[in-house]
Length: 120
Image 1 (cartoon, rainbow, N blue to C red):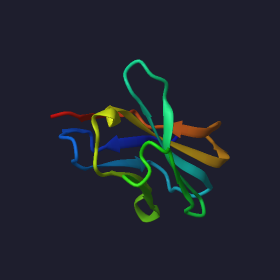
Image 2: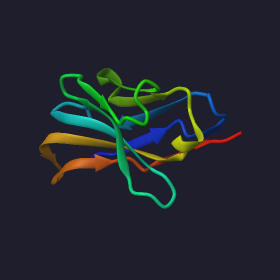
Image 3: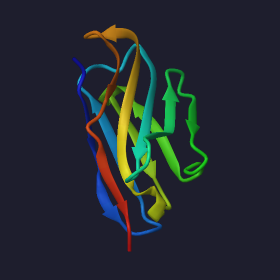
Image 4: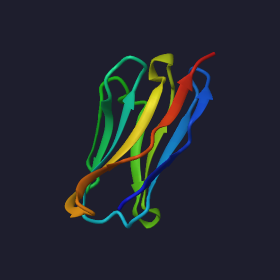
């Protein structure tokens, strides 16, 4: 079984910054991609950032230029650096790791979710 533990939640004023972390309980090898999703109240969960095994990144238009996804394989951790935060970024953020092989019967795992609130 793989556990993904998220941290970095918080309340921040518009224009502020936060960094989310997602630490895996296993070495992040055999990874297809690592993603951050978010789900705002009453809305569907959507992908906001992805980093692939070759470190290619892609971002949702709504956060492009403000958020940066990165990974530290030595710490088995993926990060989401969020700058210039807006009230519209308020959501629960989830990390998702997709493996190229089955791990305990599953190809993907989810973090528990972490609340980000942007408000003055």
